[in-house]
Amino acid sequence: MELIKLSNGTRLVLYEMPYLRSAALGVWVKNGSRNELRMNNGISHFIEHMLFKGTKNRTAQQLADEVDAVGGQINAYTSKEYTCYHTRTLDEHLDISFEVLSDMRFNSNFDDAEVKKECNVIAEEISMYEDLPDELVHDILQSSLWQDNSLGYPILGTKDSISQMSGQSIKQYFDVNYRPENTIISVAGRFDRGFVLDYAERCFGGAPVAEEKPNTIRKAVYTPCVTVKEKDIEQVHLVFGFPSLKVGSEQAYTLAILNTVLGGGISSRLFQKIREEHGLAYSVYSYNASYTDVGVFGVYAALNPAETEKLINMVAQEIKNFSLTEEQLVRAKEQLKSNYVMGLESSLNMMSAIGKSQLLLGRVHTPDEIIVKINAVTLPKIEELKHQIFDFKRMSLSAVGCVNEVALRGMIANVV
Image (spheres, rainbow, N blue to C red):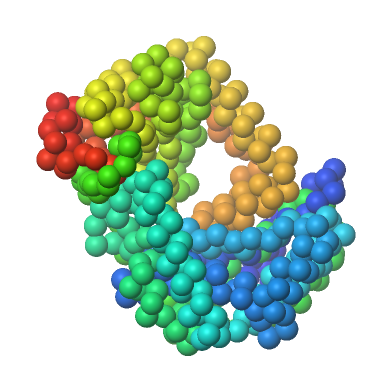
């Protein structure tokens, strides 16, 4: 792995995988919905869409065609704290990736007619999420947990906030928030180092910097909550929330093992207990969402409304009784290491790993370093972290479906 700073301060992260025939390129910008204000909520995601709508040199069709014509892939996504634009092609076509992504980055049009059209597209995307209770329930939890903080804003924004946007307002926000100092270019796969250094400098080394500074981000504070969105649907979708670790915590790999055992797959405790043994839910899992200053550990399940209280008690008991033997710990470590290492055998996954890590942490751990950290997890560390995270007095719960908030609060009264 190699880190290089371009002439304007943009950082370039390289990871050579010469045994592959593909190369992945990512442009990472530390800007997401957390950087927004209530009145322009959704603008970061809107920018992601607009960068595919045409530049001074290429139409929207040409942007898609140039990568597609060589069998490559181009895409992007926006999160709460960053946005990523990425491609994957054969190594011989990496020049096309650089040229297309840099053209999108520096020459996009932000045409008012296209903004109006895309506003309708995003409004439909918002409506789509409203119809996906398994997605909506997580957003509801996040918006309630981080009260009055932009971390709780929806990534897509609202129909009202996006309807206020114009080409000029989007371009102004773009110029202020897309800056060399908060941009990472990551490349992984098979490539010629000299070629990449030359292309990176030529395509991304001359970015102008706006004088206006981005908004200052306020620290988020976990606030326990019970939030319900009543919907006339067949199932109740539930998410339990607990205060968790921020990005880069030294306990991250301890938590990864705890999560793997508790609800990380079909062999996990929650899956085996709730689905296989009792048949209460088709989908049940746990996860950890970490941000630069806070985190939340979640447990999700979807089930028949009549079984809600039974499931709540079962999840609580599974968490409270959680423990591991040394043999189970060894197995969980092997499972985690295998998933991690096999996942990095893709140029796209490796590009994502190094780009995100450099952007959020300012450093990248090699696969060997991470394996050492996983191996260093012990039973006492897991037990300590379990008590640190699973404080039921600070437990939160969000629900979507045919369930009343008063009734739900009564159901959790005995476990809190």
